[in-house]
Image 1 (tube, one colour):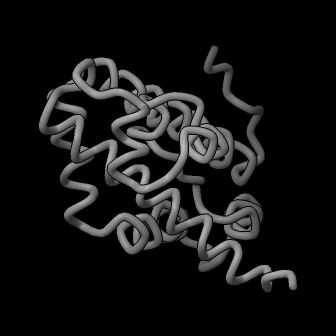
Image 2 (image 1 turned 180 degrees about the vertical axis):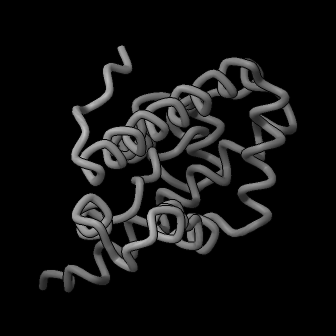
Length: 153
């Protein structure tokens, strides 16, 4: 019997969260270099194969998936001049972190920030993501204003 797609996705999300939580807890306790993928798997109660179905490395597990900049529909609405017509208000709507906070929880986000401060390699990954988001916002604003896409290279 095949599971409904909603249940399957919920289980995948729970496994991903468990792996991230185990990796974060262990890295905070032992440092990035003091943690192995095997330890993360043991703490999360999954196999090594399962870990690599979700993440390519322990660093990737610690960084997690890159959160998208709004939804595809939200980006499209923003670029078209909506949802309210006020650039700043619409930008704040697009950048609203509520979904991420709900997914990770405030305690989880605080742990991520603590780990980024403790581990410069992870901080570099977070900064690279923020730069990519900034470039995406600049391109969306340019599209909305009818300007050429900025050269951010």
